[in-house]
Structures are given as structure tokens and as C-alpha cells.
Image (cartoon, rainbow, N blue to C red; front, side, top):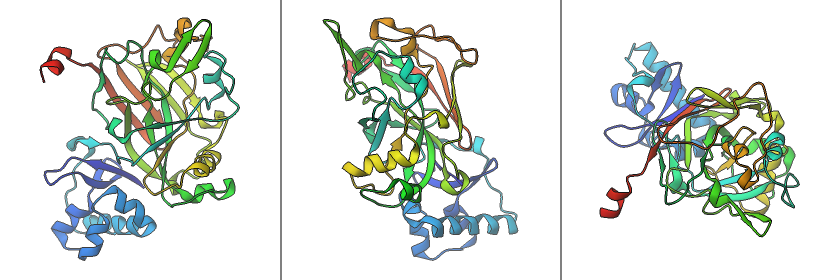
Length: 329
């Protein structure tokens, strides 16, 4: 099942995306009177649907079948304004997790030996079609990173690798937008990373377009993923190229933190980032026939499309922040 959030006059609504039709169980209930009060509450938000698990999904399917039986008109995807499918309480991120991405950056002592552990704030989250706001006072080197994102569905601490996929509600796409000149610091020939400010700024976590539930992605380690910038293929890989797989990352993060439903774990990005074009920051560019070697970082108006097999495409455009307006405000 593919689940979306969209803007409604009454506030954000959750719906199933069935083909190109938007199956909003609350709207269907308003028309047909299907549910009791407790069921309506369980379908009111993505957090309650995640908590409701298989039972909540059964109620959504019940609404869809009732709408079909009564020939109820359902809006199309083009008729609604998508929001991020959820605003997670926290985003746990794993860096340096693809073999080819490790090849395109300078050496560091732990590179590839264990996942880089950093966080993104939920205040960074934007949805499909919303602008990635480029504040030039934050960065001159704005970069993209397509990542498979895990949505946790069941709580756990010290989760065993062999049990880890039982804790997954579903998967979505994260574009881990990065301020490279804040991430990579060079002084006196020494390079180090700063993963706080470089990963956390307004609109640096585009998320979406939907959550595909785990039953539709039985093997998260065999998904094609790619990024295009203005139609040029910049990243092109498969999740089997992860150094640390989905199950291991769930285990890894659960050692430090109790995982709760609605948390998101982002799994790293493959090669092809703008960073590879920047030897000043230790970038190492190498030739591949299936991608366009980036000429540099993102620019004003650039259109970024991040696609993962079985989920869809997350599209956003870069918009330069009007500094004069911000200073007056």
C-alpha cells in the first residue's frame, strides 16, 4: 500500500494512493458513514495509522472497496497538493554507506568502517514540490543526496539484525540536502567533518512522495535509485551497493536509542553527488558511463528528482532566499 499526506481544508489528510486515485478514508466515511468514532481517530493521521499497523491498513482498504462499490468519485493525484508523508520525531542518518560514494571523497579514519551517525531535525522536512530554500549565508555549496528512508513501525531497543525488518512500517525517499562547505573542514592539511550544521538547515530534508508499506518491498536491498538534476542523471545505483544494509542499520541505531513508531532512518547515498566535482573539499571525480559527471553544486532554479523503485519520485526545485526580505522581516 502507498500512503500519502495531502493538504485539505480541514488540515492534513492521509490517504491511500491507488493507481492515480486518492483514497481518503475520512472523506469516504463522511460520504458513506462507514466507521465508528474510534476507527475515525485511528485513521486521522500518519502517526495513528503507523501505530495501527495492519488493522489500520485493512480499514483503509475497506473504505476503498466501499467507494468502488458505490461508484464514489475519488480525486486524482494531480488534484491534490502533496505534503511530506510524515513529519518524524527524529531522522537518524547513516553516512558513508555506499561503496561508490566512499570513492568520491577524501579519506577519513572511519570511512566505510562503520556508519556515520548523525541526525536531521524534523523542522528541516519539506514535502514534494516544495522549494529547497538556498540561503547563501548558510552555504555556497548546496548538494543533493538520494536516500532510501526506513519508517519504523514497531518499538525496539537492541534489535537483533535477524529481527530488524519486523520493525519496519514502510519506506520512503529522503533527499539529504547538504551544505558541503559546512560539512568538510580543511585546515593545515587536516580534513574533518561537521555533520550538525551541514545537514540541518531549513528545507534540507525533502521527504516523500509516499510511504510504501513493507509488505510491498520484501527485499529493500534490491531497489534501483537515481537522481536527476534538470533531467541529467547524476546518481544511478541499487541499494544492494550499501555497505551496511537496512537490517543492520536498524540494529545499529537501536543500540543507542529506543526506536519508536514514526522514527525515520535514512540509509546513505550513492556516488554522483556534486561533492565529487570539488577537489578543494577532497572530492574525487571518476568516470561512469551511466551518469553525468556534475559540473558543480546545485544552482538557483535547479530541478532535482530523486527516484527509488517501488516508491516513486520526489521532486523539488532550488529557490534562492531573498535576503533583503528576511532581514526586514
